[in-house]
Length: 159
Image (cartoon, rainbow, N blue to C red; front, side):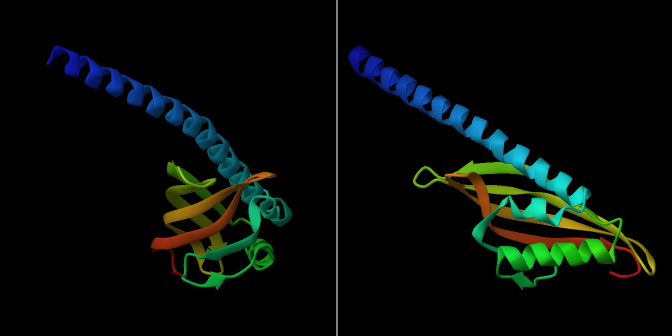
């Protein structure tokens, strides 16, 4: 019985060490994705649609907060450029709450909350909700290949 317990504890310790080393790697990679997300927030703040493009994979697709689907990286960048032109003070901030890494593929899933604000003809509008982003690690680093934004609230006359 004593030998069996030692074997069980040894196996448990080995598994714990493996999990901790995986978590450390995921933590480092998780920080990379968090940093990229903050950089993309900064590009939005600066209204730099071209910089936004650098975070997106060639096959990027998004469901935006109103349920519309933009089926390419170019369509999404053009949409942001139009949005920036229409609303000079528009800003969106996406804040990750969780990043999960695939154990089988070079993929990660980011989950978080987003908030947006802008001034419309009828005054200030603020909306926000939750989002999910799918990331793929490429030769050029982590790129977003799919996003889903769901608006859960809107405050303002133009909601």
